[in-house]
Amino acid sequence: MSIPLNLHPDRLFPAEPGTRDLARRLYATVKDLPIVSPHGHTDPQWFADDTPFANATALFITPDHYVFRMLYSQGMRLEDLGIPRRDGGPVETDTRKIWRTFAAHYHLFRGTPTRMWLDHAFATVFGIDERLTPESADRYFDRINACLATPEFRPRALFERFNIEVLATTESPLDPLDHHRRIRESGWRGRVVTAYRPDPVVDPEFEGFAANVAQFGALAGENAATWAGYLAAHRNRRAYFKSMGATSTDHGHPTAQTSDLSAAECQRLLDRALAGTITPQEAEAFRGQLLTEMAGMSIDDGLVMQIHPGSFRNHNPHVFARFGRDKGADIPMRTDYVRALKPLLDRHGNEPALTIILFTLDETVYARELAPLAGHYPVLKLGPSWWFHDSPEGMLRFREQATETAGFCNTVGFNDDTRAFMSIPARHDVARRIDCRFLATLVAEHRLGEDEAFALAPGLAHDFAKAAYKL
Image (cartoon, rainbow, N blue to C red; front, side, top):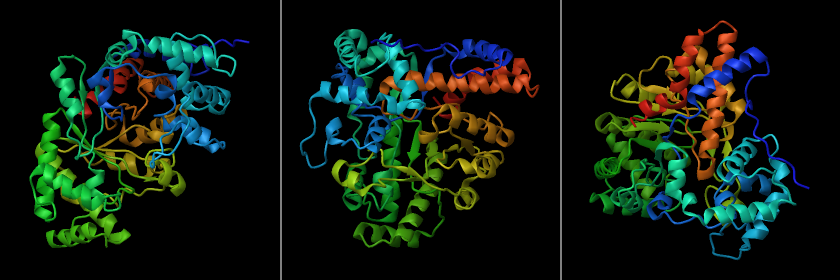
């Protein structure tokens, strides 16, 4: 029996009628603004090739760790969901069967943001008006696949339909950026830019680090085994990324630790990293030094710096060994910012040409550390609630705890940080609704003028991100 799929127009708005009405009116002014997506992990090849997405399973399940981590937590094997193995071993290839498995377990996503994002995509992108259930699974699969076979559902057409003004992907310094070059040379007017993510060549604990650094030096034409040559290689690759549209760098370190070491000590650590003899403590110091060096380079080249610490990557060694990185086994950790960032801030914290956007997976630091830091240092801004906290509750906790000290203008709006292309409009819609809810509540409590709320709403939805990321 078919169950209707209804996206209530007042979803996520306050229950109190007067405040809800104001939230509605605020939302009406921002709901159709263009999407600025300044940080994410969509594949630039989609937009370079503009070939149709393969099928519903490849679109919604295989690339989305939010989806398959939940299924894995309930005992399903990743092989049975079609997730490729590192050793090329057998996995399920019947995409309809995988979709049926997903539909049979869709109830697991009740109350999660993933459920909101998926329902939004099903209803608004594919025009589906019934809930996903085991009974409706085949109708869903056939409807989505039929849509994907049409020109209107190719990547560039969807990019335009989603009203995306600009979208940033994230690439390693080892990436030649061929897809970005092809996008640029194609004449298509959609704006897709890259971001410089140097983790494979700044983290001595990253698999293949020594080989990565050798390739890095060869690409840059520098001897990256020397500290001076290694830094020169970063400057070279950053300049190349900037020439291909990059306006930002992105640093996914385990902690926010920064260092300010002598050149001789940096060379010693680099030697040990390349030899594979570096200790965990030394690796942390090396990564921290690179954050300080990257901040200095950003002063010179103008790239906005993003620091994303606090994830224990690949916590499940079994999953990492069989399936590799980014398979849903990254777990948030406690993170210090006040002491960790001090070496960097002592050196660069007052530079007018530098912008550093801080993110966290540790919500306990919003009011205690991040808001006071951003509320003082001119180089610091706060990124939105991120990853595990990209949820209605997470967004409200961020606004409630950060705004009282940092205000609104030391934050950078919203970014979707996703590999799941179809979820981008949904994620931005949720953020806009929650921000309008928060603003309406401040007005209702006589803490903000209504005119000020209407002035702030487009900033939170669009303008702050565009300005902070220099887009």
